[in-house]
Image 1 (tube, rainbow, N blue to C red):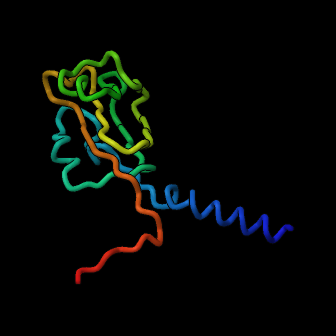
Image 2 (cartoon, rainbow, N blue to C red):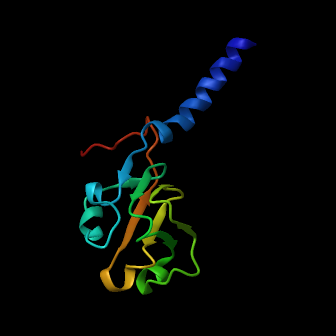
Length: 134
């Protein structure tokens, strides 16, 4: 009975673990962090974000914040209503579920374009066959 339970535990772990093991941490703005002097369009360009990845927003908490908004809030720089507000200066946001994600600084979005939009993709499961060209 014990070997079966161990095998089941390992099997379940292998289904859940890939999301955790292969998660990537992105420091938004890299060494410049989250501030109004960074071009976040350029920063996100070429990056692929997956469910389980982590965004880290580093900033001076007296000067900035991170507001999670919908597409309208992103386009119009409106912080309310929102899907979450952060102001610690070192916020870590897990990317889940898949889809478009929108982040703004409520204080600098409208006049300095301090905002970020990314698309979060589902991870491919290990062992998923990759089709080859014929």
